[in-house]
Image (cartoon, rainbow, N blue to C red; front, side, top):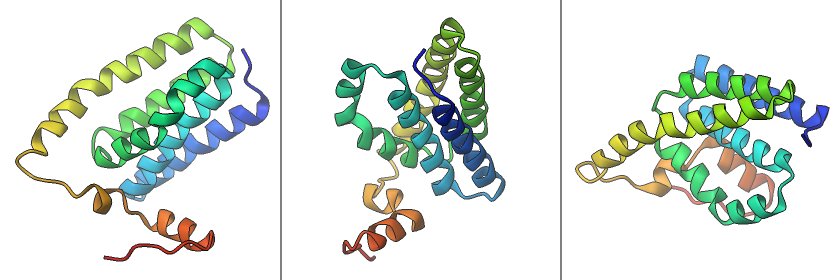
Length: 147
């Protein structure tokens, strides 16, 4: 397994951030931390083929996390903690099994939520807008969009 102590610390910090955001009822922050956890796992795996295949999808994955930010986020966070424990223990079989189950368990609720979007149209720009994103863009010297 290619993970380092720094990788583990980053993933643990993201799980902690998601938990803190959940406790603060900050849906956007929770979604951002959960999406970042997925990115950290991808970076940690060290598989260039998988990383190159997922790179074009990363922004869509983050967008999906924001669109579904009110969907069972506490359960997602606990699943992330379980995956982190398996990765830390270098139990590849358990880590891959947990990752597969994590994706599979999210499929049905996400599809059910997506079905409601036809009757309740969503504005993807508004849904993905967050205070952190606006601050990041402003800090980078880029103009931010305002409503």
